[in-house]
Image (cartoon, rainbow, N blue to C red; front, side, top):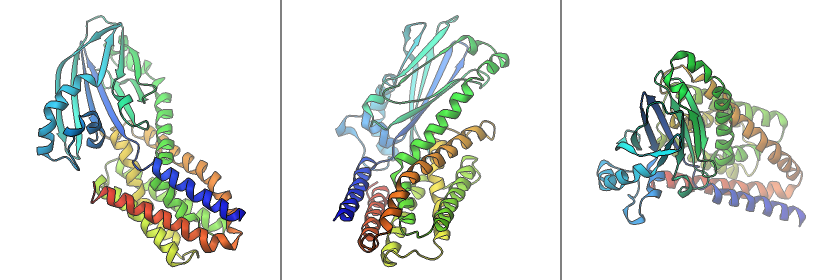
Length: 372
């Protein structure tokens, strides 16, 4: 009876996590550059995120086409000035120009141009709409001077939606750019946290690993699976971030969901026995999961300007993913090992967990294809 209660608690925990993670956490970007007395902000949103800021009766259904974008373009134009509050030396300034367009890859891009007083000393930017988006939504902000050197970079959320920086550095050239060096550690930790958050919020990746590990009988097989997954996703994460190889999100997302269905069904067909050659399956699907991780870095424009500035974000983000995986594994694996000592778990628990993983994979697959 005690073991049945433990199994029921584990299954209920998985369903709770699935409900909380039915959608991947949203991520938007804001890139700014200061040219003399001008600040230009380019803000990118996925349509699924930006439509939450539109009236319910005006939200296009499914993937946005050019016609659907045109139907809400006026609303988006009126929304644009409400996205950001900009203050210079305490005084608010309004955008002098506003534009919005639908970019290839199904991304909505806003462009705001602000004219600031000459001789200003400090600028404060606040993302006004983060509180109206889901709690997991994050916005990565990168502001550069005229040389392209970073003035500030920060990952914002609804509780921390403001950033400020001195404008003196923006007036100078390369000498001042070196003074922005302290921003690098903040950038490292921001990408590290982004990687940890991606794996913790990415229930599809975690359930995939759970389905792989729940049938493992030895530490050797567990180590092999974790090593293959790490090697595979690290490879495609690097290649995709460097724009060497690219797998569109409309393919990578459903393929990741399909990997859950495959592994869960394989566990059911093997009746809980550890399949031979599971490491090869792990490596193959790990390559696909790596493209999913890479999309996060592409969304914050890492790698868009070539190789310079890619190494640190790539290393920090991947380290964050691995740190998140290790943290989850250190909690889940001891529970699984303890349960595996009881025949009832192998007969009923493993099939039940595998069925949950397959159902979740099918749910996500349909949500990313048929009902997208």
